[in-house]
Image (tube, rainbow, N blue to C red; front, side, top):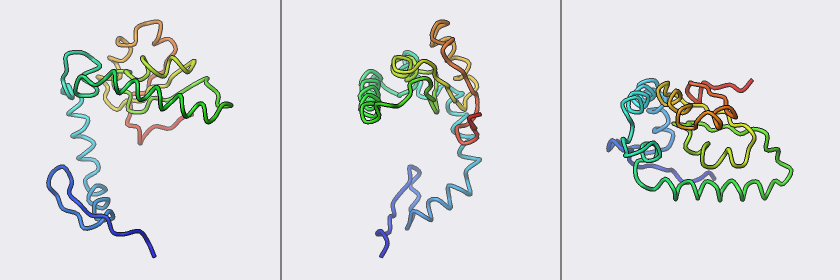
Length: 147
């Protein structure tokens, strides 16, 4: 009939007998969890010695960016007619992926970031020349509507 039941633990040692049970708990606590996430990023997130490390939490930023570039290249190769006028960076942070990957492939990038502090910082991080090719929305991704 359907797929097997999926159960397990969350990162707070909560036990869930099914995916539906996990989703119900997430739905009930949604606003609290989103606020905790915003507070964590506004307090500095991972920390880190520089902006790249602060976004990813360790020194693996270059590997992560290389993987992102390979993934995007493969996706664009499969869709050779894809337009490269504009991309969106959802959960953009300071714009690390925009700066090192997306602006190399697209004319413009729209950054959507839920943390006001990170969204403001992204303009400085990108620098004037790159920031001129970007637009910025300081809002949660789930509240974003492209118009």
